[in-house]
Image 1 (cartoon, one colour):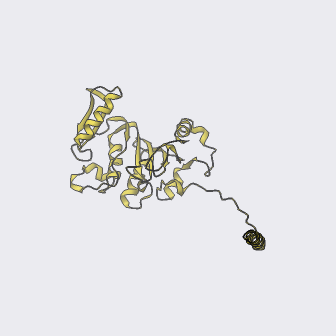
Image 2 (cartoon, helix red, strand yellow; image 1 turned 45 degrees about the vertical axis):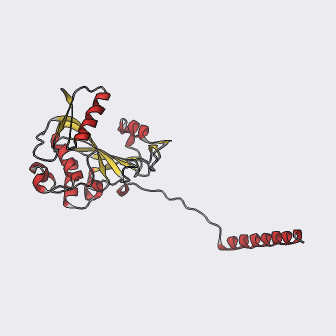
Image 3 (cartoon, rainbow, N blue to C red; image 1 turned 135 degrees about the horizontal axis):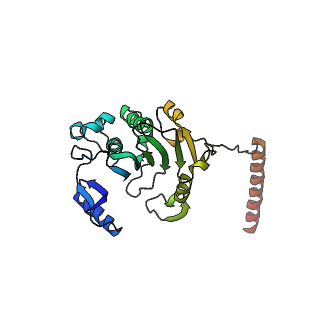
Length: 266
């Protein structure tokens, strides 16, 4: 069995699809198991160096079926928060996670929302928040999402967080999802691999840094709109007198055209 790749699910069909997907990408005999990831069945703690995840959104579980150590991080029934707590627990120190979350995780005001954000920022190292537009998961869902990238340290390390305002992913954002030349993904990859060049970017750019102190002062809010600045350009419109004069001229011209038409009709 390939011990490098692991995956869990409670849907046997999804387990088969996942195993087939891994094998078609050259991963023979992957370790994919039938298991409830959020329950005490999952004893994987401090085991993995990399977690890539798109966990279920807007699910709800009873407290008694959730692993007790996850509830200690954030006491909640929301699966999107519990999975984040799980990823922190499953990573080795120095391990990294890239996880897709619904926008509500970034700015939710409940105690659990703030607790998981504070856990990742204060006790580990949050590196990036990539905000994605609603539509990237259509036609299945239209929810707005973001990617969180963090490293498990167990003792903090977040000094600043990189934000990117993604607008396009190479496909239209409607139900058809047809190819389009607009694609921010290559730019995201290039900028993320050259973060030293991001230091001088302004809050009006697509990407920028925000210091940890500012994030903490804003209740650990991670929504990009909290920090992004929008430049407004003044638009000059004609004066009322000019508009009325143009209307009078247009009406006069219309009258002339009507007279010409009457003449043509005899």
